[in-house]
Length: 341
Picture 1: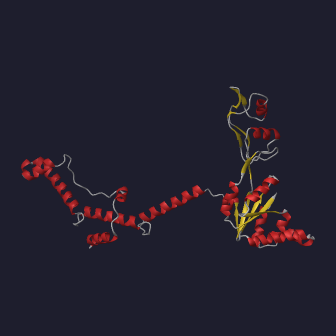
Picture 2: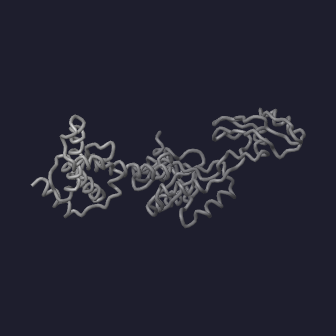
Picture 3: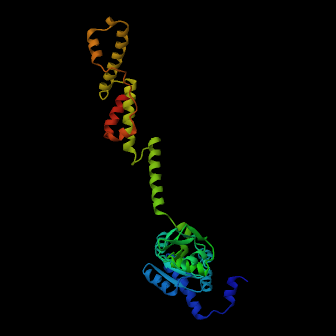
C-alpha cells in the first residue's frame, strides 16, 4: 500500500495534525526550506545552533513521518524533496538566498572529536613530529593504534606521517581515544544542509558549494576574453570603442606610411624615409664611382649613421598603442577621410 494510503486509513491524533498543518503553513510563509541533517549533534549544541540562527532561519524538529505527510499534502514540487528526508532530519525555513544560507551553515560548523564507533568523514592523518606527551605507556598505545611512535629528547614523537583511517571507516574506541588526546578533531559538527527548496526549484548542497574566488576569477577571465574577442573581431562596444579607434588610427597611419600617401600628419615620416632611401642609393653609387654624387650629398653621407638603412614603417606594438593618447573620434574621421577620399 502506498504511503498516501496508509496516511488516509490510519487515525491521526490532533497534535500530529497540528504539526502537519504547521509545516504546510511554514512552507507558504517563507521563500525557502532547507532539509538539514542533525545526526550526532548533542541536544544542547543543537539548541545553541538554533539560537545563533534566530532572525535568519527558523529550525524546526519534526518526526519524519509527519514531514512525509505534510509534503504529500503539498504541491508536486514539494513532494520531490521527500527523498532528502532520511535519518535524523530538521526543516529550516528562511527567506535567505540558498547560496548564502549554505555559506552561513558551513561557517557555523565546528571541529569535534570522533566518537568510538563513528564513521570517518574523511581520511584521518596523523602528522609526524613531536607531541606534548612525556615518555610512558602512551608510546605503546600509539603503536597499538598503528601510529609509529618513539622517544626523542625526553618527548614522545611520531616518527612518520600515518593515515590511520580512510573516509568511511569505522573508528574503534582505542583509536578514537588516541585521536582525542592528540587534539585531532576530524568531525565537523553542525547542521548538514542536504538540499534547499525555493520557488519550485531544488538545490542540492553540491550545487550550493560555490568557491567564490574561483567563480570571481572565472568572471574576470570571461570578461577579458570577451574584450579580446571584440577587439580582434573589430566589434564596437562601449567598453572597446576607444581601443578600437586607437587601433584603427594606428593602422591607418601605418598604411599611409607604407603606401606613401602624402598627408600632413605623416609628411615628416615620409620625408625622413625618402631621405634615408636617397642616402642608401647614393652610398651604393659612390662605392662604384666617387664622382657619381655631388659634394653636398657626400657631406650628408659623412654625417649619416654608419649603418644607414631605409626606414620601414611597422605596425605599432599593442603595448605602445596603449601609451599613446587616444585620438578624438573627429580627428580620426578626418584622417580616414583624407586617406581614402
